[in-house]
Figure 1 (cartoon, rainbow, N blue to C red):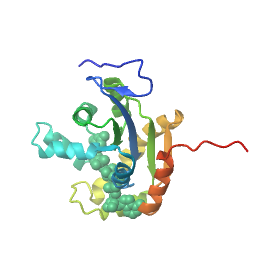
Figure 2: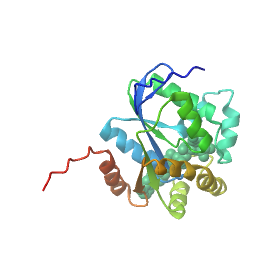
Figure 3: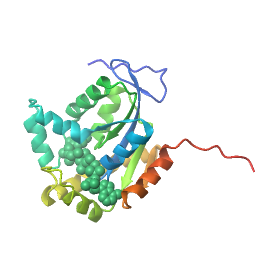
Figure 4: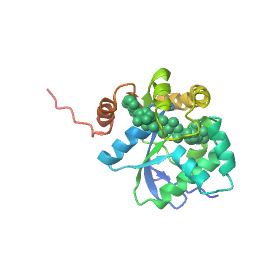
Length: 209
Ligand SMILES: Nc1ncnc2c1ncn2[C@@H]1O[C@H](COP(=O)(O)OP(=O)(O)O)[C@@H](O)[C@H]1O
Ligand SMILES: Nc1ccn([C@@H]2O[C@H](COP(=O)(O)OP(=O)(O)O)[C@@H](O)[C@H]2O)c(=O)n1
Ligand SMILES: [Mg+2]
């Protein structure tokens, strides 16, 4: 597949159709509140929310040939090969009229990160990182009640391990590039959103004293 990267388009990315988009990666452990806060950001700042997990679950439901493989990986808390997830993300971006996207739960490992960058040419504007202790995330996941096959204690433990071993290094990578905006996600939803708003609100110019 051909990758079209317009080198004059500094900072923003290009997809193979050459649609120029601005992307924010929304990362954090399972249950840290990514989906909840993305809904708030959509309402207030005009982004389109793309959850990698939601796209994978929709792919299972659609009866796709990859459905069984995806379903087995989600039940084990494993990360689906990036070519599958990236195809779903690319399609969702191309089908949408918006040019501003929150990509939630992706990239989850180095393979996700490197493949997305080389296939799409997109670099995130920044990474929103929801930092939350495991005990709190566990409590939230066990109370989520969305009927998810992976919200059971065995799979939750596996997901935490994958987060520490594979996803945190991606956050570290972006941190070393100065791109991470870390949020204390252990607080109540409204307080977390206040911190999120401070990241999205346009910088106020400092007035010289
Ligand atoms: N700040 C918060 N305090 C308490 N519960 C929360 C908070 N944010 C989200 N939740 C709840 O925790 C669960 C997981 O949140 P969700 O947004 O689905 O997280 P993620 O997408 O990171 O897994 C949901 O039931 C949600 O309502
Ligand atoms: N980039 C991604 C995102 C999710 N997934 C799979 O989908 C599962 C659920 O992801 P999710 O983002 O919906 O989960 P939460 O962090 O919202 O609880 C993960 O545990 C992985 O099995 C993946 O394989 N690759
Ligand atoms: Mg989620």
